[in-house]
Image (cartoon, rainbow, N blue to C red; front, side, top):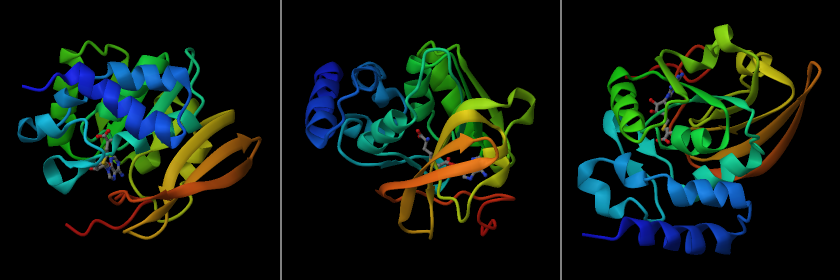
Length: 216
Ligand code: SAH
């Protein structure tokens, strides 16, 4: 049996700090969240490897570096209300929950949502609210959000989600073709979106009304 705590320390040092992630709050959250509880039991001993891993419905839990990078870009404050699109395993939601006041997260697959709910409950994350649905239309009831993170690849600029971002708020998402995408950081300034490309990533597609058409 691996020592998961030591594996996490090593993950933070070799995969995050050595690659330029120095935000102490983000590093502490990555040290704390038990990723092995969010992966499938068969992959538990690989939970802290430098790679995404398969979850149900042909989806993936993102690579730790990508989770830390996107979280850092959002400059999360303890008072923030954050919206995540693509709950998947619930891991990214747990990392956000360590750093902000409340996390809202939407997942289109009920099966994934239920597993994520269970893992988050078992780990004591009471400040994460989940729902099943098409996240491209956001969650108007709780808008506006300080921060929005889309953890699936958007084919185009997500207008409705942008409309649910607070003035001055930040949104991060992969945008582009299905295989690899630009990681885009947006800051809202009034009705204007100030956009910046901050790297290349590879995410599963965002499927929905303002996403890719459903091919399954
Ligand atoms: N953040 C996740 C990884 C997400 S993988 C984690 O930490 O594990 C991307 C997820 O987005 C998949 O679970 C997929 O089902 C979901 N997804 C894709 N399109 C969606 C949409 N329109 N609304 C909600 N979820 C969506």
